[in-house]
Image 1: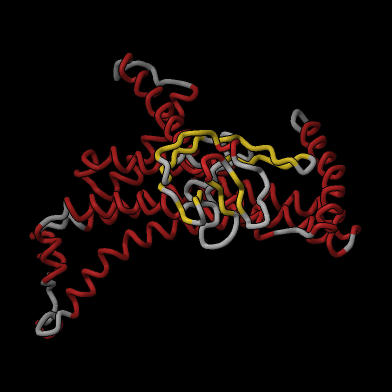
Image 2: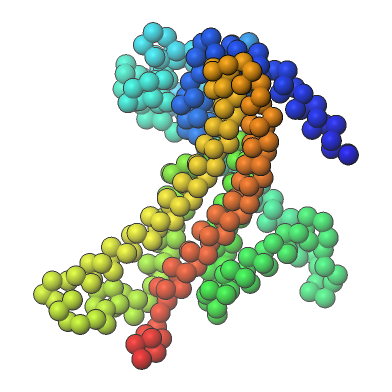
Length: 358
């Protein structure tokens, strides 16, 4: 009962505001693709909502190099609405393209410029990194000030201790065994960074709402780190099994069929890590937005259908958001577990290979 009244107020507000908004969208036409990709894609400002045809955004720093040199300014200096050519005009002859091959990029005379701006994805990366540091440094500070035989911590510190030990013992140590302490710092960082980024992506308002792990560039860097660690630390027996595996000679020479397959597998493993995390998180955001847009789609058919869809859409959206919290944990666990498996497979030794062969 404590949370029933606030939840009831939110539902009543939806019943009051959504019909008016939906009728407006019915007249002007609802751009479902624009809404969906506007949330998923990166941008030079952080869009929150539209109020009376005025977009409410958080401006972000723009750092670009054009034909006239380096420029640093705020993204609020760009126009909110595009002109007839699909450009949001800004200072120094720069503009943000809203259509075409350069959509979302800062251009000068139609050509992209060198851009290292703090975009929405970069801002979310900074925020999530700060939160990750706090989640790690607060328990670390407690451990530094206490002895092993002191009573266990409580509250947030106790929760983080339990969480870290669960990931270490049940995921990392169970796969890597004696080598777990060596790779635990990287794998724990991967798990908690992905988990924090996923959870912050579920939060529907700033500083949350960023689709960091739904950006393939972010998942590519994470997978690349696993790829480098796996292959740089691989043993001689690991490379021998790739270039000269224990199979019949005709599969290795004169046509190196098995070495080619094994070498190809080196690149498919990080590719699977990258695409799995990216696709699952992007799909979760897309489904949540699509469920909300169902209201406006039904209003485009009939007002009564739109009104009837409001409680259904709200209930399905709440269920999807709760399910997304579980997916946030599962995806972080799967990425960490597979990374540990790939590292473990690269550390096969000669006596282990002989046992497997026997």
